[in-house]
Length: 637
Ligand code: BES
Ligand code: ZN
Image 1 (tube, helix red, strand yellow):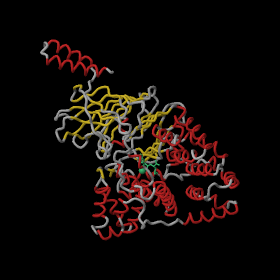
Image 2 (spheres, protein in one colour):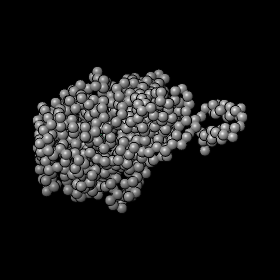
Image 3 (cartoon, rainbow, N blue to C red):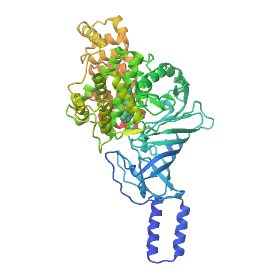
Image 4 (tube, rainbow, N blue to C red):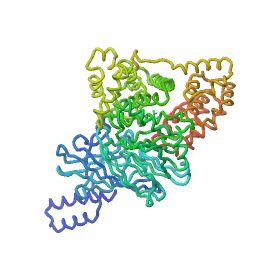
């Protein structure tokens, strides 16, 4: 039992003594003890989960507005000691403010300069625990002193050996969808927005960066101050700490990464300013000031995360030939779709990801041309089709607006909100014409900026600004079916890009005679390679696998997308020569999109399953806690 419980028990005794009319002197002594204890006391409160919104918080009645965060980053204990001071608005004269927490150790709570009781609700595996704090109608500030837990799902702590420089440890956060609550107590819903200041203390010689105004050089004392003065939802709070340096690309854009990778990363991403120009043509003026990219260590669990002012990205996009930079176009596009106009609940994720994927392709069309972008559309279409097949065409999770009520928002996660969402918008654009569509899109961003957006509200906006209230046209286009029905409407556009027609022809020849047409293959972009590898029959006979490997060194490809596709084919064809490099890939890279399909493939045979267990055992410390959990589930099936 911790001290707080003793104090709580004492309070009860006091109350009892009082009822029995025992002298006030005794009472006074108890209160003095209590005061000097300087620890908090808890009270009991049951808080029901708001399953629609994935929160315990009462954000609708008491709404957080601003965060002042003090954080000491402790690499020895792998914990953050923090003080989160929240300014809130109490619209309905509520008597309690409720936060979301996940595995946080709460030390004390101060309301209006006075230490106050608090109550932590029963822990839920997915949502964590509620933190209830009694307030008076006039209170506006609450301060929570806490330490993050060992199971913080937002945090990944890396040892020096997991970094490029190998000298200093590293920490990064990933808060989308509902992980921010394991970083700090907050009302963890995308429907409300907060501004923040942060004061972060890190060991000397390290730099801290956040989704805020960032330093460009390291400080002497390891102290960093941040400000995000534009309101953002909590899932966009982000922090990274390590041996990080900055290189500007132009006045507005630049790259943060480990010092030893800086030049390479800055070269790869030198087109960011051109992308920004293209993006502003689609979305209107960029509202966030600077746009920088943090290239994270290889264990970063996803491709990219649109943290405002500072996209976090996996280093697996550094292919040496700029062929994977559409990922940056995607995260940049979120500066409008997602960060300005934000999905109100996780059921509306397609408003973030579908709009962004469409937007990403428009940026790529401007900077790399139509024939290049058509390949991105087709690969996305294939990803969507593959998920439609796996889920089944009647599965409710294949709807654009899903229902993840009471489930982890990531439960329904797939390519559907991305690719079905994007192709829906492309279809609308082709139906009404680009000029009209662009005007609508611009209005959508400017008229709803810094607001939450529900699917219903987005459709109402579309009715008014895209269809001019013409319900006949809207019904003819089957808008409701696109959004609310599972599967894919029969008016979904799809044409095979010319460059893939050429690839398919060469593939057929190769399948027949096993000979590679060297000059044509050598000219291929990453995307043509992906089309080729995806469409090869499997198992492919070993001689053909060898021919491809000998000519193009696919097993040791530095291009993560090509390597990943090749390893899948190698597993399907039992091409063992690729396995040693695949093991290195699986133990260095933490990107879920690459890991999950490879583990899924491995566990299909007895031999493969043994290999999967061995690799996972070596690799698991390099994986993000949520990724490790997912892979564990896959291999234990
Ligand atoms: N916002 C997402 C990442 C995300 C989505 C995290 C949902 C948690 C829940 C980000 O913008 C994204 O989509 N990243 C993609 C890259 C993109 C090019 C498709 C990824 O990480 O693979
Ligand atoms: Zn995205």
